[in-house]
Image (cartoon, rainbow over all chains, first blue to last red; front, side):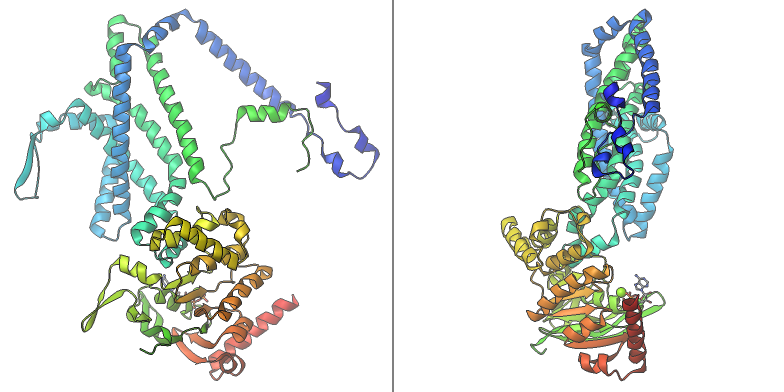
Length: 316
Length: 264
Ligand SMILES: Nc1ncnc2c1ncn2[C@@H]1O[C@H](COP(=O)(O)OP(=O)(O)OP(=O)(O)O)[C@@H](O)[C@H]1O
Ligand SMILES: [Mg+2]
């Protein structure tokens, strides 16, 4: 520790600082170290307690983590997540573009869509779509008030998976639509003027100039919405769509090991979310090019390296 | 239409709600000329410039560039509004430089200059790149090709914007107060680029408050007030010996501000 606290007596002799005097590590931030130590102590206690608590049955957690039923459920969860995310993105972008269009009817429809689907809770929606056949026994696609082109039996279309998908996607789309709209209107008017003046068509302007800049604003919120969506898939156990949560529930209703199985479920969600967060960061970096944004702050170990290094930082 | 006229505005009116921003403006711009538009704030200079490349749609009247009516296609005996694709193609006959530069913030300097060629004209990348480097060389910024607009000075950004505006080989360049957003010491570098363009006989329409630049470079000066052109002529006539009271008042005001600036 002596080397850390060793300070610059030399400069005290002179009354004017020279450039070399500044080449000294700043003070040691005692408070910062103490706070970090206390927090780590509490964290260690928590981890130790969890690891050694026999009632948490880590062996059962390990047994079930790669259980074929759980993995089946995981696949359903991933499938639901991906398909509903794509669906929500497409619908959300469409609704956002409608809301920004010059057609008052489209604007009104977009507003109503957002108002309705932002309001109804996801679980209620899933149940609603699941029981749709009770009110609308037959689904038909055709000309409004005119002849039908395709007719389908609602019950055969509205499987658990489809109901879950609609419940997840339509609700998330309402939120995404607002994120997209906000991102798009955040692009300054001058960028669009410049693109038009360069001879880009409106579609090309949107694709090449507006969307990439809007994405910078949209991505953090989009990532958040996606993570909420992933976790919302666990709600589908109410209609028994066979996802991760449903499978875990089936298992613990037989062996009564609720907590270990819930830990298994949480563990898998954590893995998925961590992977996606990593991916999101990388995409965010790509779309913040040209804005002088620094990379994500708060890297623990770069902080440690900076604070533990005894070498004076050189003048740059 | 006379072969030497590149841009012709015909009876252009523009209403913004109740505001009559342009009151029937007629303007002929000969090939190779530098036309400066002067006038007080709110007189409609920007609006006129933006009507020329149809960033604003005139409420009535229109603009002809060579034999193309911007925003229309000719049919036997009449004009019909054209598609946005065709309008985009017509806009490539013009290049525009904005007061706030408006470089594409997410693209490098090089990509900014290439974009209009690759996405607009469909020029192959390699060829667009070569042309972009030529243009950047012309404005002395080859070494900044890989920088993002946010990382170069305002004067450099505006020079890039000029290179970008030149990329589609436009028949006319439109400048909307290109130096107004710049620190005084950066104004010179942009004006120097514009001077050299004038020497190469590039046709330019320049909205500016730089009276000295107008007096030196312009071949024609138009003074606008309340949405109309109230006085036109060569710079010696309009700037040195204005006939209209409003022009005299405006120029005297500008000179007073100028001398106050230099004193300060
Ligand atoms: N988008 C708009 N909506 C409503 N009014 C507008 C709009 N753009 C311009 N105007 C009005 O039209 C008139 C002319 O504006 P314009 O911007 O052409 O003036 P200008 O001569 O360029 O002024 P400045 O020297 O300040 O740039 C002004 O009264 C302005 O308030
Ligand atoms: Mg203006």
